[in-house]
Length: 411
Figure (cartoon, rainbow, N blue to C red):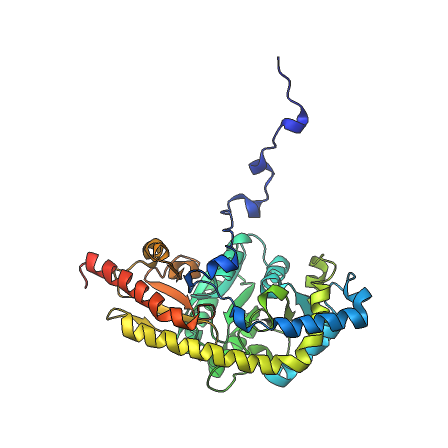
């Protein structure tokens, strides 16, 4: 008789998984970004690799190590490095019109960790959250991961449809349901590229106050405006009681820094800090960012605006040149994304393998909805694709779409 040692016995993993992890699909692994660069990739919201300020960051890192290396390489404050907080708060007051103190801020590993902390603090399994439709793929996944019931509110040419938001809030109130938060991307929305008007921002704030809920405002793209006047964040219109404000250095200084922040009422920040057990977010990177930001951010942002404005214009011209009749798309004033709606009969999820076979990739629209609507839509990112590849990539997508329409008898 062969005996099996306890070391050889595999546990029943499914029986051990938490409720949150039990039915989640495996996360896709991101290809090496150098491999992604061999394709015409419109799928990732990555910053342009050639624009990343590597030399300046290297100089800042050397300066930090020389001046304060023994503390920059040590554990740090869970809420974040004070020097970075002060640099960010000064930038936010100057550029966004936001007045806040360190008691309102927590530094996070990018905007994604900020969202995860908010959901951990506020949302239990079965709780309700309100979001835009379409919205950021990461938010859809995060809401699903915590078992949230998602109520979707459409986005139109002026941003969040506040009439639909009010109707949703009234329905929930009448049903005895308290939504935990309203998630909005106020500037250059991911994926639509649309910014919510100032009038609607004020109305969102009024509705949140009236219905006793919080706003989670995601403003990852604020600095990347290519035309038009900047709009005040909802947080800047608030008295600090109803809005949480999420920002990031991922789109400017570099996504690899994994540095973001959240502004919120001090009571919320206290709960988030209690949940955050990382010994300080990227302490060395935070010291480097604090060294780099005051002297370099503005000039770097001006350079980025020129790069991305040019790429946006190339993409818009290519869409006009190639896409089948009946296709519409947004014209963003900033950010990374153009949102395309194809004629009925085209399924962008079904199209994707054909595009990938021909070396082009994009994000199918259904991934940007909690209920997987949007099968005739797709998101195109112009931030990562080289200028001289955009037209060819759009041409391939258009050719596949025309083939879909022909098969559906709509050509």
